[in-house]
Image (cartoon, rainbow over all chains, first blue to last red; front, side):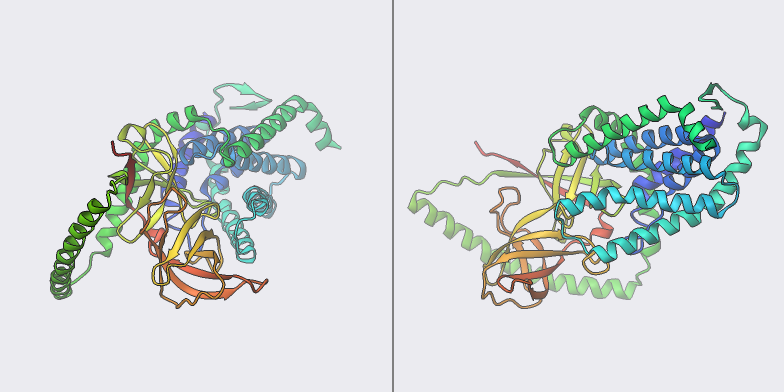
Length: 171
Length: 283
């Protein structure tokens, strides 16, 4: 059932990200709810789960905005990095996962930064980097309560009952 | 050690994910340069997601406008009086313009010049989604190819130029705004008639919506507040659409050319409804 619960949580997050997120930004700094959800799913279910979830969410975003590969690449990478970090450091505490997400978010944002740099786009780099760091910090801060809630939800019997097993995990 | 063993156990999965990431990098490269897109993905996602997005965006817009509508009757009366006066002035201007147009037609007829400008059809559309990342300034409209929207159609609202249609699928279209750092518009200072290229500039000054106008002739005398309009030289935007006003004037490091920072006419943070200028070549 975990996969069903995660899909049901990701759908409103996708809608928020596509429609309302741009309205709630303050000077370019905004919350990436998909990243926060993907990170906790990746930590609970493993890096492959995060990677697949990130790929699917990213492809939907790419379909909406017509830039194939951009969001899919970023979210898949984020899911993988957070999941792999979780496996390496056995992150059961709170600071570790939040830090892993912050680093993964910065990596994800490197994709447009590198592209715009090589495209010689007129960008105020200092403010752009500040905006990226602040958005990453906001994402990591929101991740903490989301992760806490998701770990509780995933412990419920009805949720933890597997639909199928794949890659050594209950899906 | 244990981590490495874990990775070795999932070697195939890691290789597949790595290959998918490489494929996505290639797709992003092809997509961003406009060489290749996946229209099937855009059409499929558009068909499913657009109605839901429209519902969410419309609900949000209704709630926000309900909160914002707090004008008193006195303020509205003042506004009506001002608009009545403005209307009277505009009517006088229109009358004058009609006379000039008739004169223009008569003189063109004398010279034997035939009208060749394309017919323009305006398609009203609403914004259904906005790119949230902040790196690219694009948004999705609820009108697509089946409504007559074509690639590169200019998009504007009552304030001024917004951008152009970058991608079209059956039910929706993606607009790249003029403040996107990939955008360039051939512009002209209305007062001095100096031509230049207006580029989108990201985060030039704490994310204020600004553009930079380059390649102005040396010795150009500009004032802050001068209006900049499209020159029509790029063959995408027709001549005369308002881009913005001059905010500050600078010289680049080379000291040769002027560049000016523009404040855009349109408020890009609050775009809800737009008009798509669909160009149709006259017969």
